Image 1 (cartoon, rainbow, N blue to C red):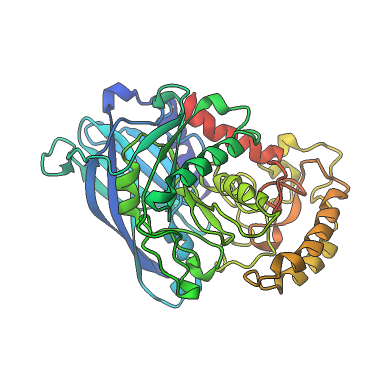
Image 2 (image 1 turned 45 degrees about the horizontal axis):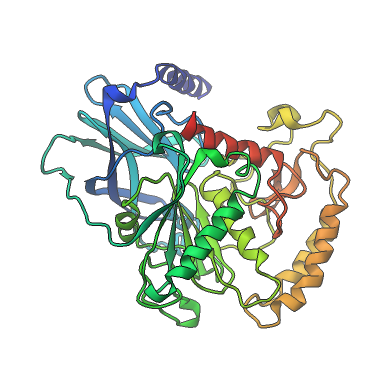
Length: 472
């Protein structure tokens, strides 16, 4: 097995060294590949749906092979004539999260519509999708040969833009920038000024937060003013249903605060009006919530009725972009989630800010750890866990939730603020929804606590690497 693994990495190293030339293999367009993803526990199937010629290619023309190795899945594109690997990208999906829920474990089958986007190839390509196994090794699950010159294979229809689009921040050509697209859901036509104000606010919040603040010139920001027939979004748990254009809803996987949409085709049809690398969906609703999946999209609630709690929306927006854009894992472990066995004991997570390693030499971020910092790194975890247990018993949807939560929250913050190794990079136990055996790099971070604290050095470095993959 060790020999096979070494051979695999040797092949990837050779292929990476022979970086493909964009103009040799691709034209300056985007090929959108839609497919159906079906399965249940122990089963996973893919079926090609439709191909679209969709606008200019917004991604890098120099870093065509994924330099990051983030994500649950790996998309690879090979030139059929030569067999050369000419494009790859890691990503995650709603399906892989659902695959870890009790519903999937019960044997229920589900189908989700998904999309991958690649530079438009000039000749036949083989597109493959692989998924990590329990040991984090990619295993191929799907393969299809695509002929871009087959007139019946690719939909080349030019769709008339449905909604008004604006370039909110313009720093240059999409090929050399990260193009962030902000969409709204649950905003009626009469509420478009509210959406514009929200989009501007969240753009300012993002670029007021390091390391995005220092990399502002590397971004373009687009908005599309998506009009919904009704204000607000679905809350299935309360039997509240809205005619919202993008189909976002609370209660995903049974979590009241988790907001996603399964209306992928609708989302992609609308988003394709502009060049984009990342999508953020602002939700015109007042219940706390959001979501973020790597290389898919971010969602964030954009209203609140709780006075003094407006900062929580700013927290959610940046935190969820940490997931969807930066590939960061959740560093908290006490809040309830619907996943089971999301991280395997003793297996190193792919997320750059989570680790199962307890040996200093094996740490992903070992270069950032001071020799004097003990590994694992002590913090007052027992006291923190006791307070979080009390908070976890509160009803998040109750009118007095914030009043009851606040003293507990302040007490946990005091523990974090007074930690012996606060401000140091180490390995602090408790992360990724797991209390034991998974470690985070700092005692506090935007990916750990519900606060406006910044990203820790490891998370900041990971985000910078993602930005570099689009711009350098």
